[in-house]
Image (cartoon, rainbow, N blue to C red; front, side, top):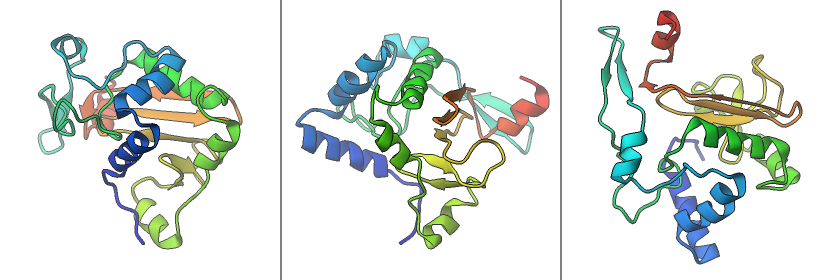
Length: 195
């Protein structure tokens, strides 16, 4: 009845495992990472992976400062658990490859499937929950999608994350945007200080 930010994509990952008969990571590696050439993307945290992860910071609005965060993911519950919504560890180059595959259609999904993803799938009650979080957008199938924002064309879709990551795909214009930063709760601070 309502829209709520949740671990719903983790439930979808479990569904993928049941339907495919494969572990979620194995399925995603074979059908997304390998297809797109995303050779630096993983869901397994090793010492080598931790050494390559950029530092991340948490912004404190009260003091207008940012402090270093630990390199850990609270959504990785065990080494056997691969989160469908918060478990991927990647880099800019691989993220761009993924976004480009979503823009050109047919690489990962049919163009018709991408069009379905970028349609509004919320009831008016659900939209009332979602809209304050992302003005001008609604929720498609796993992505935010533009319905009235002046930022881009209707049907543009993507997602953004806590540390300020932002990616968008505009299939009509064959355009992608991938913006990455590592300051949680602080995009305004980043822009004000021109970092």
